[in-house]
Image (cartoon, rainbow, N blue to C red; front, side, top):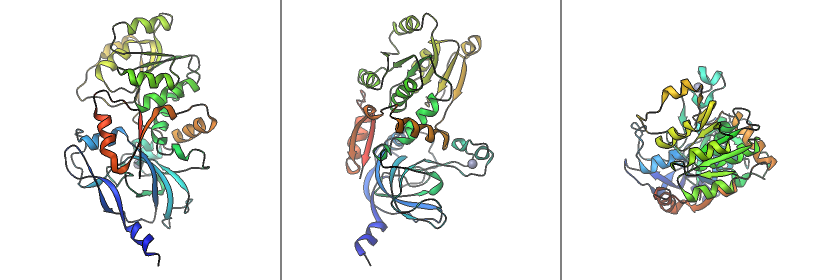
Length: 354
Ligand SMILES: [Zn+2]
């Protein structure tokens, strides 16, 4: 028996949430047991998602029932090292990215191709152990197999990129003026996808000068501070006095959301792609008077958005790399979260690697 391999697959290092307060620890834990419909993977890279930030900071009241301790990490990729008997279509050495929404497959939403809002949804990295670990066990139905080696280096950002593709490409964009409100990773990816989707102008809004620079690198035609008094006038001028055709709202900031609504032309479309504060209020009447269409997109369609994402990346129509600004080793995770938690937040998408 290969004892070295045997022991490595029972124990692993992982970033573990242990207490209901800010922080986490890097420690030895058991590798989860492989179920018949699961895949055991060696994690190659992970990226930090908004949910991971909520878990680390423990400010999100939506996890009151969460059992401790648990391994978090919502977005990751890796190599299959073992597949359960019922994990059909996968074999050792396949490279996969992971869809973190574990859908049941049988509820009304799943049967209507809305697995992203499954009534029995579980989330990897919260309800089941996540990918900030040397190994992870995931249901085979949540694995996205890479068909070639070319996109492996982007494996950990694919879920976020697929969410952006879902937000941007849910309607025809050709010739439209699009505002991307908020230039964190979903917003940054949305900029390049909107350009590839034929938008005539993409206007990026963010309070941070650092993120506005990233927005330019991702292809934004104009970048503005959303809270500057001169911004609405500038946008009106750019859009021939009419306002933007579409807003992709990825800031989650109440003041920025309200400003973005007022930058739309009558009949425009408002895509809500980021959560905001509870109890936030907005001008409901303006939606009615101006005939604005609003759509909430909690994430990505499984797996329709993944196919869109792969097509965009494989064709070279978009280059997500400028938005990936930092890589840290798992053991240095505190440095990554401290960068995110700084007021200026000088980072885009952050990768974590074993
Ligand atoms: Zn379901």
